[in-house]
Length: 176
Image (cartoon, rainbow, N blue to C red; front, side, top):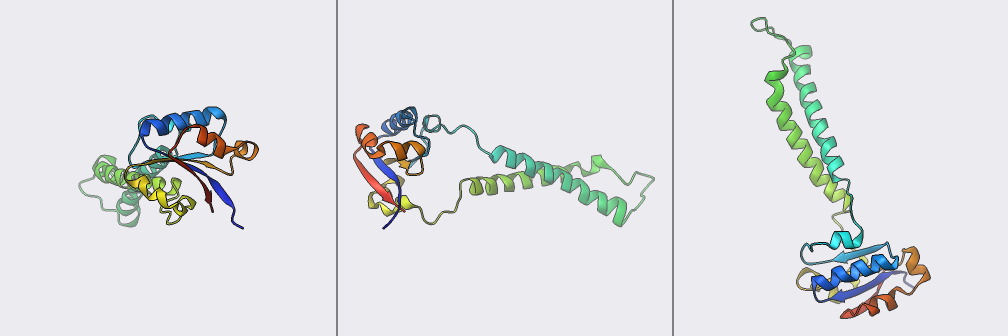
């Protein structure tokens, strides 16, 4: 016997998807996900998605890059191989700004990409919605909304009946 992942509904237009997601949130469902072939304006608000950890990851990467650039240059110029050229100080921050800036940008961009991939749990070669053959159209011209079985409201109510009341093209039970 297979476990149920959730209930998946197919919509023809992006507007129908946004409206369905909004009504689903208003109904009290919280574990929902939407699938679209392109970014849809307002879908994030309709799903209740407001915050992400990517900006924090970018800031941490940038700070590590700046501190790492400074530490690298300080170690090489003032500790490991100090050269006093013309009586200049060994700790010369103005001369190191370019390297610090470049490492800040490099690590911030790496943390942005890795943070986005990690927080989105990518790459994900398998997902239960792939078991629905019609889901392949999510990359071309259809829009899908899934209420997951782990949702507390889905355990008490009938998510399939609710999704059918939104007048989708079709509704499927998605197995794990």
